Image (cartoon, rainbow over all chains, first blue to last red):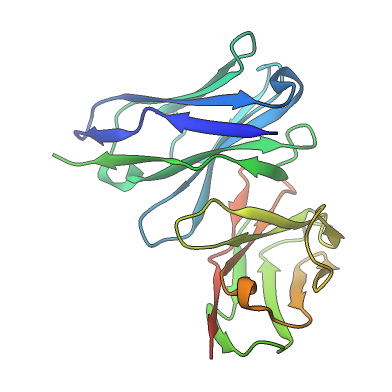
Length: 120
Length: 106
C-alpha cells in the first residue's frame, strides 16, 4: 500500500535551517509528482512547493520562494524540503503528498505530517 | 488566484443536505479539488476536476461548477462527515486553498 512518511521536523531558532524528508513506499515514486503542503496551528492549508516526477520542474509559494528548496532522490524514493532563513510564520505541520496526475496538484495520498516550530 | 469559501462554518444534523460554496477570484475552468480534513489527520481528496469523485468516496458527496463558482454537496450528512472541507484551485501555480468550512454537529 502507498505510504508517505515525513521526518526532520523539530524546534529551530529564527534564521536557522531545517531539512525535511518524506520517504515513499508502495508505488513507483519516480513516476509521480510530489508536493509539500503546510498547516499552521489552528489554521487552514497552505500549498508550499511542487516538483515534477523527474525533478526537472519546480514551483513554490510566494511566501517561501528564495528560502525553501524542494528536491527528490528517485533512487532512494525520498522527497526533501530544504528550509532556510526560517521565520516564526513558518511554524506549521508539514505534509508531503503524491500528485496522481503529473504536477497537476491533485494529491491522492498524504503523509501524517512533521511539525516544525520556529521559536527562540 | 484567491478562493473564498462560504460559509466558514455550519451546524447540521445527521441526514441533512449540506452545500458549501467556493468562489475563485478569476476563472479556473474546472481545475478545482475538494478535500476533507478531520482533526489531527491529513487531508483526504474527495473530488477532483470539480465534479469527479475520487475512488472510495461515498456517492453522498458531489461537486459541481466551472469558471469561478463551485459547490460541494453532501446529500445526506453522516456522522463521519463532520470535518473541515477545503477547496483548492489547480488552474495555475502557485496553487491555493480556500479558507475552509467546518461542518459541526447541531
